[in-house]
Image (cartoon, rainbow, N blue to C red; front, top):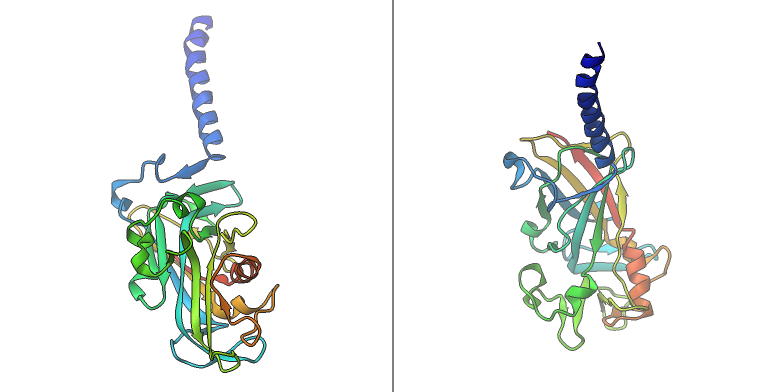
Length: 266
């Protein structure tokens, strides 16, 4: 009997250590770099879709809309940068981080840019978080390629740095008849980079499975640019094209423009 116990104890200890390692791993952050994604999902297993709305109405360029202050306007440009996307499970504490070096320019004039394909560790998630803007390191790295190419019209050549979000259009109450918001600034105290965390619709969970592709649709409400907590009126401040206090106010407003509309599991 004693000899049998001596043989069994090492195996029991090994099993306990293995289970302990599994438990502790649930508390760490996971990223594309340190988690082996099964070959069937190396391309993508999640599509993140953005849709532009004015309150609940889908955006149409050139169509008349009304903001919180009953000021009418039309939109001709609406785009922003997204990166550092994270999927979160608040119950387990698990966070899956995508590559922080990957940038996406969501431009609603280009429908191909509004859907982002991601490879995420199969698991259940109930939150999504992402950075709106371009981090400080990239802002001082000069002209770059891809989504950060200056040809995209989101780089200030006169003032080194990226425009994090851009909204342009026409408004009768503006002195010039137009409005132009080019929001940028990465140095304190004028840093406008935001990272909203979004809840999923009540009762919905993203349940990623191998060999399946799920979808999340996030709406971006343009009317959020103009109020809560700061009042932005076309007749008073129709232009913001430099870093500063006004840019920070508008960024604080638009950081609240995102809502998860739907989660579709396959």
